[in-house]
Image 1 (cartoon, rainbow, N blue to C red):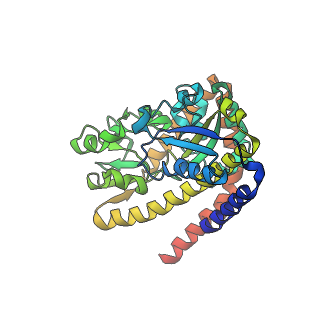
Image 2 (image 1 turned 45 degrees about the vertical axis):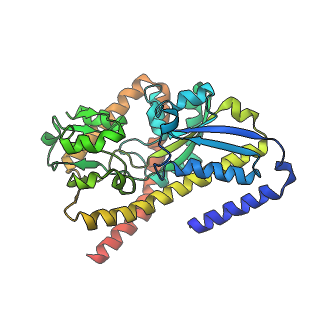
Image 3 (image 1 turned 90 degrees about the vertical axis):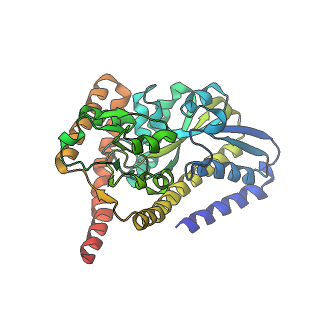
Length: 357
């Protein structure tokens, strides 16, 4: 599938390159990332975007990529793109929940849709329109920017057998999931990525959530925490491209088409690359550290998490009309889509598992 997809992009590239209508105007943009330029596959998406746009335009449309090690404002991307310091950004929508709580939906929410359902909602269920309505007040455009799929529930020093084990637990877990855990008695903290390993190793925190094997292996958490919990909180974490509206409006139509095509291509590639990376990383983790135990939170704990999440959503919906509008849209689409997910993906995996047992 990946080869076919990339072949189609090559065809698109060739169409742009042979057309004289796309030659001429010189445009030079800058893109700021929340991530360091070495944090693959997150950073790979914008780097590949810049390469594709340059090739499609014959070098006339260029985008310079700057990581957080350069601009020093990992969580300032929205403000910098809005203000025009950068024409583009690559980040994640739920970082802006303090500015508008509705932004969380365009990354992912606890107990929400899986990646296939969420992409279908974006492109066929009104999600793109709702996302743009939310970002209009910031004077930026927002596009999907790559997905991690289901993120793992975190690395824990101790096994979680009951709700009592969550009381007083010190854990790094951000966003809406952090609010859910706080309701259940967890001492939630947000520690810079560079300090996470040391904090877990020295007992400053008892647990942490990062992403999944492809990215967790680079952090080394599997070397110091024996319990790896399955996900519930970020079932389809979508990254985000932001574009300054004024800069977008100044682009020739052909450059807009190039940029839109490239964003969609690198978004698909990032999901594939992250999945493949996790396949390889998990095999290495389990080979090198065979005592790692994969755990799922007990049903009573998950039920309490779900109840806390629904309570949070309903509270926010009562206060914010846009939050309610997007929540209702996602709930309705998930109810419809989950019927097919259960018939197709779930039953296939379940059947194959039963055949091998």
